[in-house]
Image (tube, rainbow, N blue to C red):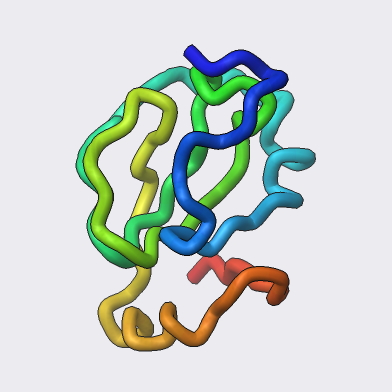
Length: 98
């Protein structure tokens, strides 16, 4: 388990992070579930094992192994995978549910 005062252990270049999602979803009970490998385009949510990061939604830009702190909740549509390299840190990203 990660102490709430520690920094993340993963690399920022590997994700598109939706940091404001922590504020929206951080209060929800988010148990470790579906902690599987994370291919490019996986949409993940940090679970309660990730302390203060719980509720943060990430989109994976580099294939990653399973992590007990991160739940895989979906995948980017294949038609949009090629757009991921163009999203860099500091840019705003908005999810649209279809």
